[in-house]
Amino acid sequence: MSYVHYDPSGWRIFLNHEEREGLAGEIAKGIAATSAAMIAMGIPALAAGIIAGALVAHSGWELAWMAERDQGNGVVLEAPVPLWIGMIVIVKTREPDDRGAWATDTESEITTWDRDIIKTHLDHGALATDEVEFVLRNHSASGWAKGYILRDGEGSEWTEIAHGGQEVRNGLWYHQTKNGQNLTLIKAKIWGTLTPIIHLDELDRLQRGDRVTFTWLRDS
Image 1 (cartoon, rainbow, N blue to C red):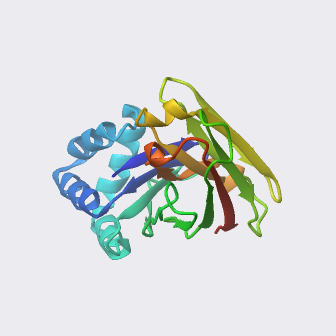
Image 2 (tube, helix red, strand yellow):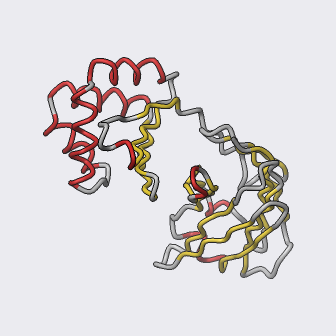
């Protein structure tokens, strides 16, 4: 599933294999069709037009680059703000995500498109029966910030950040895990900007009193 992220360094567009093929078809039709596809992904019209212009203007090698970099899991398109004038969109391979069984198994492992490894540990009965808790430990060698965005599915969300060697925690009332929302793991990338790395569903599989500990072991 596609999603987009913007920070001061520019736009990142995450496409799976089918979405990459679909966008390639729109690029072949021209700027208007490509821009419309970008807007449908949630990119504002002005930025969509600029990115679409870059993709269409260099469609010969941009399409070849997209096809080459797609190893079956799609691509990440990056449009860094300083390069917009040069009309360049960088294409990167999107590595497979593996969410493991973080919400059900005592021990599991998450791997992300950016080659992160995050161990998970689930403690049943660690809290009162009307609570669940999420702990994140930053054990990555880089020491760059890691964190998560926790949503209650009722309109509120909290961003918790752990720098190197630190841990953070926050929680929900048990009934809030049934609202269909996700939890997003984030990390600092270029210029220290916090970037979404993976969205975790299945909060509704947690049990009353559960504590989930995410230990971020490797980043890139």
